[in-house]
Length: 389
Image 1 (cartoon, rainbow, N blue to C red):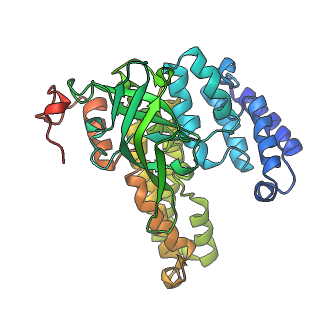
Image 2: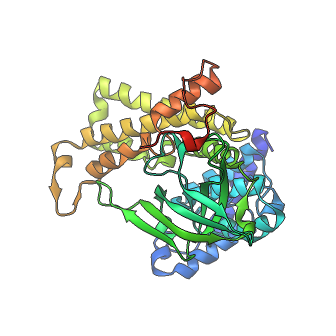
Image 3: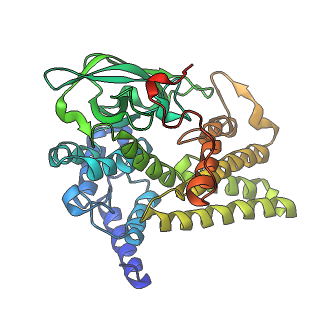
């Protein structure tokens, strides 16, 4: 359904259905009546619209990228899609389970992801393994009964304290090179030995968590993908994350429209230089959104280009909005500052989350432009022999 007429018809039909079925007083009703929200998300899932690009056998609508983008756009226009904290299961973990999971894992986990009943987190980064993720030290040791015992610590896991499940990277063979001895597991976050602790950010919010894993026993069927093949699983999710974070600036949590409205309201748009700055932001956002739509069909390392530019664009939007708001934006009373100040502070994380800008530039240089890889004296050495902080 890639022709314009078909896409326009799909948009009109989808918009009419949403208007006819969306609960009254949406989205405020989600706070006063959680059951109404659950019923709505189940109705969306029934049509395959929470994941319109997935195959029907996995709970999706089986639409091509252009048509799927129309459905997402219609839902976003009504603020009717699953909340933003479902980005991880919908964009990262669900596709990984489809690509790497067993039939039983797909039957068990995908329905809860599709209808929003289950929240998931990534258990990847560690205090000593962030940008160099492959050096992670969390260990998973097999037992005689076929289960695994996991010990370690993870950090920067979004909403981990609220999640039912997690996708874990752990080292299963320390005698292999660091990329080769990692295995991916699916973890019940309510299992004994799993502790999630929120981390307070400079905005006062608690978006990220640190997670402690102490003698956590995982069943044999919790492995996702092959033994010691977890790095390939991780790369597939990281590529999807960078592409998903960069579809529009709102995907990064910073919408452009409030800044444009503020420029209109204050009259700042009358200044030639300010109009040029605003036009540059609009052009970049539109261009990046279209570029990322093309990449969604086959996510690859090029997603690092749009992730890099979009995260930095979102920071420029926040900075300009703070500037437009004037001196009052810097006023702070109690626990929270102005929306402009809070947005400016929160935007600092965008060039770190999902891979730092420095890491994105390395990926672009090596995997997109084909330049020589950055020297790594530890490449090929067993992980056990590496020096770690």
